[in-house]
Length: 127
Image 1 (cartoon, rainbow, N blue to C red):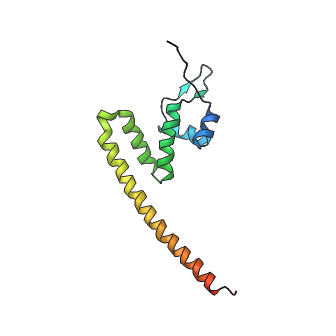
Image 2: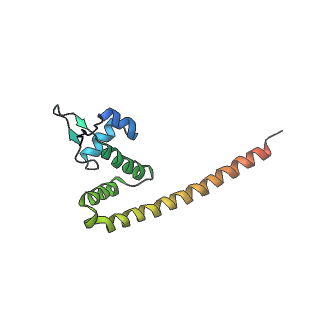
């Protein structure tokens, strides 16, 4: 049986792979969105693949407009474990999904308005 050491990422590598800035990573750690980030004996933060996966979830929530307070609540629920919080996490994500769906409908309507304006301008443009 081989004993493979876990692969750690530096903060810079984590920032690059997650798309978050170093400042955002520090902020997320400070407000509790990122917890349990390991430290090297030197005190430098060491991230794992699990951290990157979690950051992927946070990226999705942030990019779809979830408020930080809801993201923090989601993180607290996730840390509580499946037995304790799965139903509540589902409810939170379903609520957010409805919000995303509403945002998409609004954007589609606004895009149609833009396309109509472009079409109008093209129709009056001298040939």
